[in-house]
Length: 152
Image (cartoon, rainbow, N blue to C red):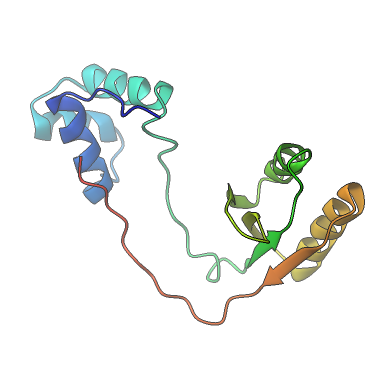
């Protein structure tokens, strides 16, 4: 996939919002003032970056445990002919935060975060039943927080 064309303004906005997205009533106006841009310019740049697939989403990262949620990493083996159908079905659930294909015996991996372990079991059982597959569950043992930053 070719790298999208980014100018210096796009790069500046991307680097800024990764490091310190402002919690303000009008965050894009705030960003614009700091970067010497009008609010509408910042908004239009971000819309364009999203449309081009550079930005997937802008949102908070919540501490699920403090909110009383449970999470599990799941892996499964899907044959080539049904992997996309399985991924699409998994993606329908609002608690799926990641879903990606990998090389190896377990070639589809996803993370599910919900209110209860029973919700996890019910959802996974439905997917297993629908596609006649086995989903392996990998509950967390320890959490290692990392800061992700992609300087552009």
